[in-house]
Image (cartoon, rainbow, N blue to C red; front, side, top):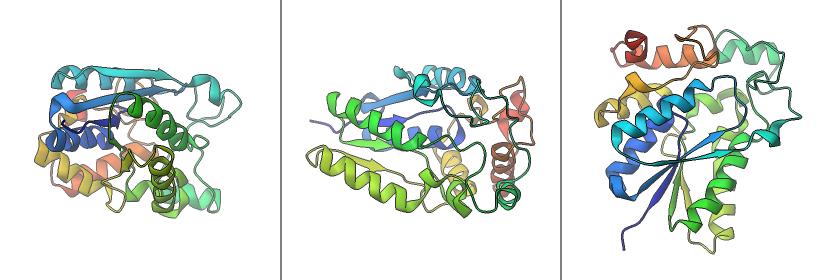
Length: 230
C-alpha cells in the first residue's frame, strides 16, 4: 500500500513548497492538505490555499481552532487591537529584546501538529509535512519553528502514534531563499500564494513576512509573481 502524507497548508510560500515536495515524493493522490483557521487577520491566506488546491486538483480539509486563541492578544489575531509590527524580523527582535515577535501565536505550531497527527493517523498517513524554515526560527522570532521544537514534537508524535507517524520539516535548516529555489524547481504556483499579515488587496510590503518573502525572491533573481499578479 502506498504511503500517504498530510501537509499543514496555509497557502503561503513555505507550505505550498512543502505541498509540492510531498506530491513529488508520494504522488498527488496520496497527499492530503490540511488548512487551519485560527482567527487570523489575514484570512486571505485561506482563500489562497483553496485556489492552490484547485490548481493541483487536490481536495483539502479545513479545521477551525479559533476558540483556543480567544485569550491571546497576539497582533496577528482578528480580535486583537494591536497593530501588526512593521520592519524586518531582526529589527523586531531588537525591539522585543530577544522575546518572540508580536505575531507569534502562542504555541500555534504545537497545536497544529498535534491536531494534524490525530487526523493523519485516522486517515492512514505516515508523514506530516510542515514548512518551518531557518529564518523563522532565527533569534527566537518564532520558537515553534526551531530545530529543538521540531525534534521534540517529532519524537512525541512518533512515540504517541505507536511509531506509525513522523513529522517532516524539510526546510528546518534552510533559509527562505532556498525554500523559494526549491519551489521554482518544482514549478510551484507562487502567483497564487499569500503571505502578508495585513490581508489587504495587495501585500503591504512592510510586515516581517512580506520583507522576508521579497528578499527570498530577489535572492533567486526573480520577481515575486504575487506582486505581478496583484
